[in-house]
Image (tube, rainbow, N blue to C red; front, side, top):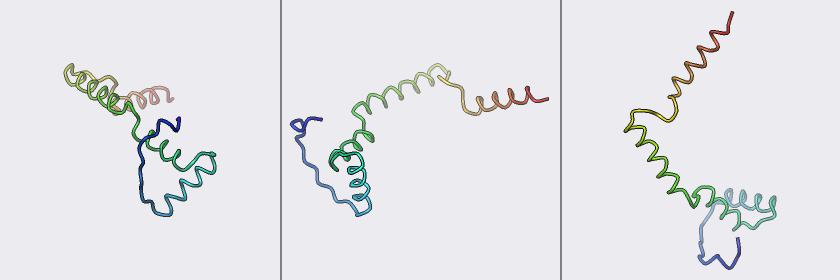
Length: 90
C-alpha cells in the first residue's frame, strides 16, 4: 500500500502480550507493526465482506423459496459415506 493513500490515524491501547505478538510478527516478516495491524484488519474485515454476506443471504433465501438446498445436509452426506463403506465391507 502506498503511504500517500493513508489518511486516517488510529490510536489503540494493547496489553503487553498482544503488542509482543505484533512486534514478533513484524520482525519476522520485515514489516512495520502498523503494516501488520492493517493486514489483520483486512483479513478480519475484507473490503467485499458486505457483498459476500449479501450473496450468502440470497443463496439461503433461494433455498428457502425452492425448498432445495444447494448442497445436501451433512447428516445425509455422512449417511451416504457410511453406506458406501458398509457396502464395501466383506
